[in-house]
Image 1 (cartoon, helix red, strand yellow):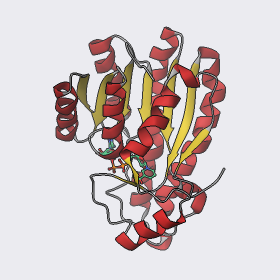
Image 2: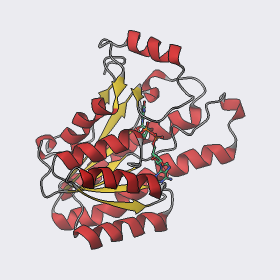
Image 3: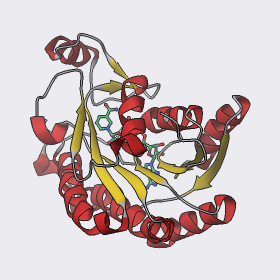
Image 4: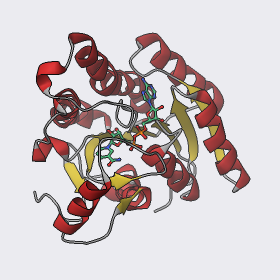
Length: 251
Ligand SMILES: NC(=O)c1ccc[n+]([C@@H]2O[C@H](COP(=O)([O-])OP(=O)(O)OC[C@H]3O[C@@H](n4cnc5c(N)ncnc54)[C@H](O)[C@@H]3O)[C@@H](O)[C@H]2O)c1
């Protein structure tokens, strides 16, 4: 996969899977925008990429804010002149507390939707004028396998990610005429360098045993699928959901 000459915004790339995408896209030749609400993490990832000979900038953004997303897009156009790829990866995820739905407050519910769902919509809305002017582009929205297995105590997160699956389909129908392809990538059970309380060690063992492929998913497990959906190789694929889960859920 070669992304030579392409400019890719990867939101939430300051850590975890997004950081993996940032390295993978840089290795494939793209200039990478490491966009995150945590600027110092984003700057660290940029330093890692630049030390390996890649091209990247760190941009501070809160994707739930319309103004901040507009500012991010303007900054990228100012720096690189264009935007070819958007990986809509940022989410309230590893920092989120699981709890029975009866205990989820309206404030928590709205915060999860503001970031995971509205943030995804805002990033698509603001990058597409640039892509339209270019004659095309590739967008990947990140959902989750919990949408399909209905994990308990995750209703705010699961519902916010369910909306992504539908959003991608609707957007595909509106963006196709501009040569913009948009798909959903749905991970499940991906371990990263970030510790999280939502999966215990025994749950990890259960997940790996349930998978057809008995290996623990890692950020590397996600990068190839994201590169494929962002590449010309996937140019006739839009509005679809690609599941990356080692064979846990089948579609
Ligand atoms: N790791 C998994 O097993 C798994 C499974 C299914 C889906 N996912 C999805 O994959 C994506 C990445 O997962 P991860 O494990 O790396 O998550 P993570 O929680 O480690 O990283 C999320 C990143 O998003 C950033 N972020 C949070 N709120 C933001 C905001 N308002 N604006 C900008 N940036 C913001 C964080 O600072 C962080 O860098 C998420 O969308 C997650 O929901 C992950």
